[in-house]
Length: 329
Image (tube, rainbow, N blue to C red; front, side, top):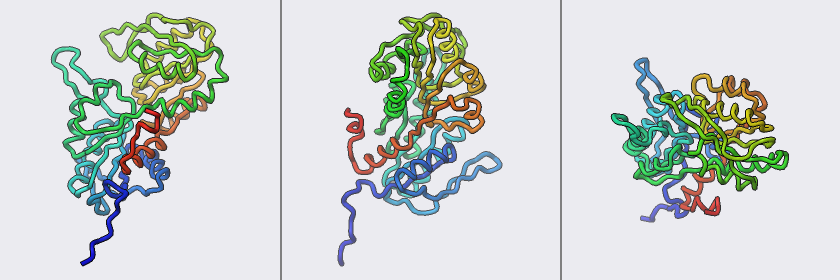
């Protein structure tokens, strides 16, 4: 009996793409970039809110990628991610990668007071127990969250997507300076300043008991009569960035360009931000932005896609190649 032909160029079979319901546009973008169609699946939510998943074809021995950000509605999207992963596991997938551009509960990364959970660790555990072999995400709120996973992962930096656009607008900026909304993001802001060959300034912030409404106090650094690149990792309620923009204007800056990775935009954040005297809001589609919110910002909102970078990382993971080489790391 002759042996069947075996493919030697793939470590875990062919790439199979599965999309949850959280980000259909992003999933299709990744599919188009790779030239690989999204696999058929049924995702049904029953009247009792239980979620049911059924695959249209076998994935035995294949390299499967589940694309599902965990923004709002957080718990529906998280459970859908977990059930999709388990479904693939039970169908004997060769390898399963959870592609989660935005990972929920990133702010619950430590016990900073008595009798509180570390929910980011719980989410990591759930993804692993469901059956994921790897994960991909962007800009975790705290670096130590990587240590909550015992499976390997690729924590990508939105900076690598944003930098081309910033270099494009950079020559038109007047004496630019990079500013962070708090001291905690200062280290991550350094690459932005190096990219634009400029300095850093920081907003010193005092938090009240209400963690969603910090009070910005003063600015460390020279910002007067300069264009400002105001950077942060995510915008949730928008409190920090609203206070930052207000205090910058009080210090007589010229134009403000607000740059952030994850547009979470909870509650009335879009309205609060749209009312600010900001030249541009520059972000990624790691969290889907509704058409209504996009219309609120108009042409001041610039949304860059994470799809090409995720697609390249998937190819490299499938072929067993280094991801760090893409960034000369």
